[in-house]
View 1: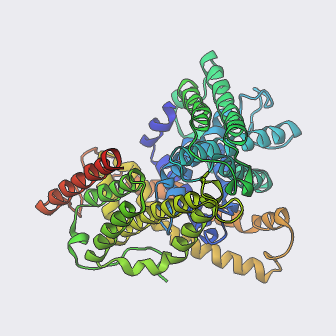
View 2: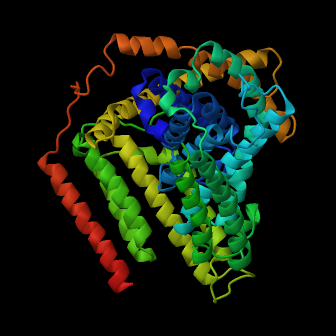
View 3: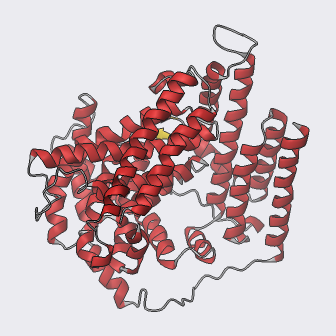
Length: 269
Length: 251
């Protein structure tokens, strides 16, 4: 997490935050009309961007995704959900660059770890895209369930799908085309910041990564079990016609996942 | 077409400190979440509308009226089914669920109207300066305000690229979901590259003008708390305490 705050002293990283946020917002706004859940989410091809921004620009991409989502909300849907949207989209770009080298699919000696030139790296990308989508879904759905505004099961499943499909379908070709150019322009975040902010190979880093994965997968899974089982909710659109909201079980289960994810990100260096 | 909600008027609301307006917006969110009965929510809604009327910014309601209607109807719809009431109306619909749907719909709409009033009466520069006065670092506020300023330019660029690609045979309307998603690649890549390419030059331009040279900055725009800001903050605090009283003691 140190790099999340330390990056602000680099002018290039500040510019990358601004540009990432602007691109994300500009691609979100035209699709605000394709509503999935009024006031909360819509069809978003722009969801391909957080994972790409996170992998290429690291913490600048994470802040850019968060601020860009907030700016998108400025065009008609600024409300309490915007707070969880800010945090959720931050993590949707944070998780990819934190977990990229932790899943044992990328060779440690690889000079271009982000170049998707073999099957293992593509599989790594898919896994990381799914985890980042689920992290975003977990945070937003948990927050709105806790406030008894939108049922967890419906929102978590819809956001997970709405984020992961564009991330995978568009994200892979985007990375293939953009990575060589970004690297050539010396704009990879690992080329901009100092050594102290880069990934450390330590047991704390591994424990933190494990906690994040457990938090995300566990939070979504147990939250859904509690919502579908105990509260009688249903997934996707069916979740809007059955079950009850604001149950303690769902809030605790999903909330534990959120807490574990945050703790993991603080431990992970 | 002006994309932003800001309305350039000369009212007391436009002259308020942006921090006061942020506080009013967040207090409205809080009040809407605290109260749980229709009469109390209608009271909160009327206060919000009166606040908006006093600042002459409610004309923006017509820009978001579709969102407000959809949110209201959606809330009534979902809560009617999942409201777990005992008074059955038709099939799984219950009276308690229906009422709960109305309550949630009003809550969400009140919050969005409060957000709209804030954005309609506060310039982006004022939001940025207000964030700095709230001890958000200047660089964060700078990134935020720069991003907002770039959005219309990027949307314009996206539109031009879209027209260019469609004139070369790109069909964005046909195909299944995955096929249509893939068709956005010829738009995303040129937009992304054309914007990110300028990062190095942008950073050099900032540093050549002393960006980040000193932690002490002066501003062209100055904001200070005036007596009316204090009055409004006190009134809002009293209103929040009243809503808490209503929720805990009365309800």
